[in-house]
Amino acid sequence: PESPSFDDTGMPSVPRKWKGICQEGENFSSSSCNRKLIGARFFIRGHRVANSPQESPNMPREYISARDSTGHGTHTASTVGGSSVSMASVLGNGAGVAR
Image (cartoon, rainbow, N blue to C red; front, side, top):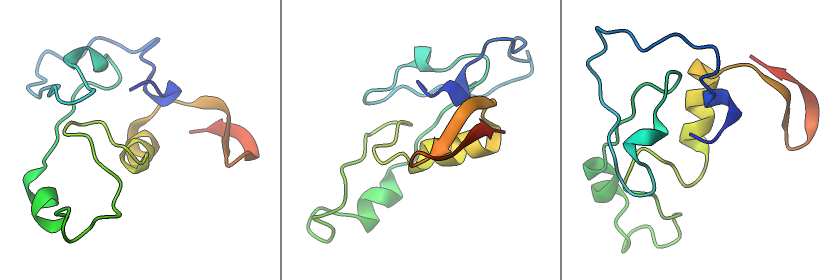
């Protein structure tokens, strides 16, 4: 939620018909949601089954929340619904505007 892609400056109010939630969890409070990031959920049961510590000891630890530890979920969410960010780059290359 700290990414400039989720800045809600200039965004209208969340529609009244919105019935989703901003699910709290580890290192993610409901105040992490705003007028841009209007909802967040996490689904952990399948991940726990598929990635038990005994079977995947080298996997990065995931937060038990909508926050991700590797940046993949943040990247995916900001690609789909993020705001424009000036001087965005990938590994310091191709600086410009991400839309």
